[in-house]
Image 1 (cartoon, rainbow, N blue to C red):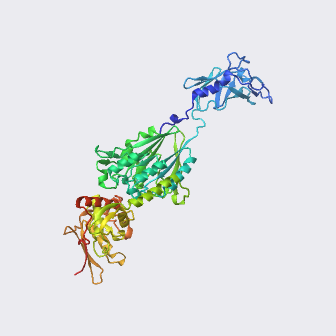
Image 2: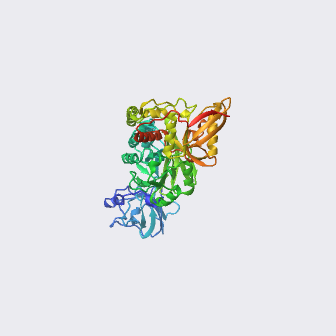
Image 3: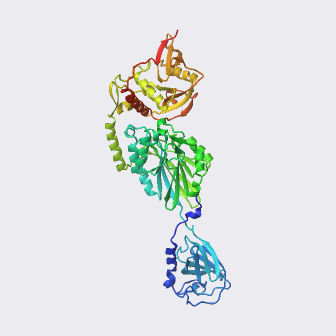
Length: 619
């Protein structure tokens, strides 16, 4: 953080000096001096010792002066103070400020101590030295004072945060109303997003993300960490959406190494000056991003901790420093363990619902789930030196009732427009793409899907479960809606490294699970045969690549739906090493593979049953 002295309240010394000296130009008339209860207390009279020609009272030497606060001080005279004598007849008081401005404060009241009548407490003006520093001179006695931070109210900044929206726009009307309402109650606030605003809803995906960026512009988003799915639509789309955005796209560990690509080098951080306080937002992106490789060609991604340490100087240039990251909760905690200068880490990527902030090495680490289901909130209080983290919670969006109608109208329009977009023709098939025989063998639609998955990540092998293939596509035109009907779950591509032996175990489980004794996995990059006994139950299996037996000792890169990789359907990939959990949406992979086939072959044609998967009787 910056030195607290730099953040003291900024007061116009010239204006304040004018206020203080007003009484010396036209002295105010004070009540006639009186003895009161005999203690010698009295109001200041019209005769003023600070006036050049004012008469003075009996000679008294000032032995000491001590400041009580910005409005009063105590004088210790060498003799008792005369009863009823106006303080202005006894002393000349001047103030020289640190900027060499000289002022003569108006003395408004005084009180003589009943225990020691040589001690006199003097009041001067209302808060007339508040916010100032300098030297107070009473006759010839000088003392220094510093009220530059006196009564300074702490700066409070509210933060609202989302992450991994994944194109789920329907709840944004409620989220916007919530942020607007709570933001209006705050002294200051920022709205931050920790990345992955794209991919997961046809309404947004079919327009390469334009609707979600327009909505976040309307909602007043201030900054976003670049997430791995920001690259899903390709580099041209990334550049177009960044240009469209009215909020900052941040990533400190992303380095564009090819100047010829559409994506430009993003800002590593942004510093916002809010009410005189410098608030830094520092961005990090998953390294490497789990996305289609073509989206990140010409870009390098660097280590999180090493990158953060290169920007350690930000702690001297900011009063509040926030890390806005899309690296996952585990990596956020590792960052906090190794870098201690962030006031809070606002994370994304792992879809973690953190209801109570994790405090790691003194740094709060937070995240707000995914899919526009929650909004995070906390505030940071800065007292000029230290930053305090307060009032953290996740707001369940389903519990909200108010809607920002302007945002909702945009959402309704995009949803209506999407109905037309889903009817858009994106391909053509002469053969049709069928799923009906999927429990006995490979099918044309199954083969199309797994080929698209394997090609998307340039993997050795790919599999998908039959339960995720929801409809066939008849011969003729293929619409965008057909693709989302076939795969309506927004499943993502999980890439892993697996041994041949472990893959054999997966194939055996796929046939025997829940005693179904039927094919459950479509396959690309390899073929397999299931051998069954006289009861139709699993006996053995053979796996082949290009007609040669699969090497059980070899390692292969395998792509599967994240549903399966996470244990869906009872599948167990604990023997495999996950390379990336979320490598892009299967629907996007299907669109890309379809584009390739349309360009190269003019149609998306598959034979329904190529012999990739067979069931035979055991000998």
